[in-house]
Structures are given as structure tokens and as C-alpha cells.
Image (cartoon, helix red, strand yellow):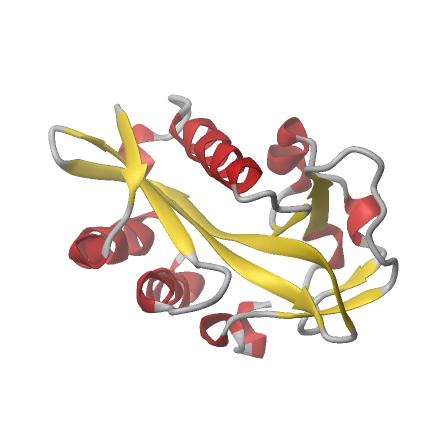
Length: 176
């Protein structure tokens, strides 16, 4: 398995991957989000990784910047979406993608990473719902227990109770 930064050339593979990995009621929206994030032009950058073997994309993860609408005291990112093709799940591909993304974020000197997903899965990477509860997500959450955060800096000195904003591709309340 090889993990690399994704590009627009990967859009069809990424779309198909998300269509296969998500339940029917979510797959179209999540696949569209994954493809839209590939073309998202932001400062700081939005980026994604793919995991592949023999030029077959088996997994994908995206990271996009979030900001506090009231201050610029921290640099944050949102991990979303993450998918591994069903044939390749439970082989460490998702873990490899999350770890590659976190290493990239550390190089960018990011302060905090958010995720909206399974606490059972993301807690293994240090994501914490209690820490995330200090930050108001961009939209009302369907499943509030899934909102989690992880500090990438020692001495967490970020503003509490921040109201976050996200990139245009994520500005759909149905995604939350």
C-alpha cells in the first residue's frame, strides 16, 4: 500500500470509492463532498490523501481548514470524509490515512483537528468529544456524540466556545 497526496486526477476513483463505502442514504452526498473538496481552493490549503496498490485507490481522506468566526487565535482543520473500499477494510488502511494526515497537519503547525464521526473509531487517534464540546460546529449536528477534537499542540491555549466556520464544500446542513 502506498499513501500519497490526492489530486484532481483521482476524482473518479475517489467518487467510486465513496459510493461503495457509504450506505445508500449517504453515498451520493459524501461522494460529491469528497470530489468537491479536491477542487476547493482555500488558504490555508484543503488537501486529501489516497491509499493505493497497483494504481487502485483503496482509501481516501480529506482535511479542510476551519476557523473561529470571532478570532484568528488558532489554526484548525476538519477531517472529512474518510472512506476505505469495503473489500479492503480492517487492514489498517484507514489508520494509515489518518496518521498520514495528522503528520501533514503537524508539519503545517495546525493547532487542532475536528472530526464528526464514530467515537469508537476516532478515539484511538486521541479525538475527544469532551474537548470538542468547547467548539460550536458550523451547523447543528444530527448526532452530537460524533463531534470530536484533538489538540496537536502542547498546552492547549485555544479559545474556548469558538463558533467554527468551514469551507464552501461543507456548507450544507445535510452533511452535518
